[in-house]
Length: 158
Image (cartoon, one colour):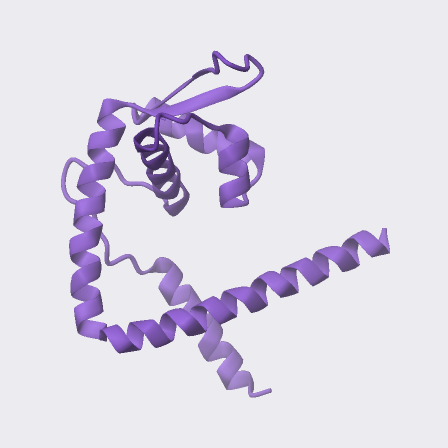
C-alpha cells in the first residue's frame, strides 16, 4: 500500500476533525458534537409525545461510556440547558429533559447550522455530496467491521 496515500488519508481525517465551518451565532453556547446530538435527541423525544430519555438511552445512542455520558450531562446541566431528575415511573432511572433555555439555544443552533450547511452544499455540489456521503457510509461500515473484529479477537484472547 502506498505510504503517501495512508498519510494523506490520515491528514485529511485530522483536518476534518478540527475544521468547524458551522460556527455559532452570539448567545448560543458552544457545544461538542455529542452534546449537540444529545440536545437534538432530547428535543425530538419531547416533540414525539414527551418521552423522557435516560442515561442508558444516550449511552446506547452515542456509543460512549456511561461515565462520559454523566460528565457531559453534568456540564449541560451546569450551563442550564438540561434538567436531570428521578424518573417518576421508575425511581432507579434518571430522566433528562431540555430546559426552555436549552430548547431556545438548540433552535438557534439548528437554524444556523441549516443555513451554513446549505451554503457549504451549494459550494461543494449536491452530486458531489451524494457521492461523498455514499463513500463515507461505506468507510464507516469498514471502520465498524474492523472494530467489531478486533473486539472479538480481544475477547477470544482472554
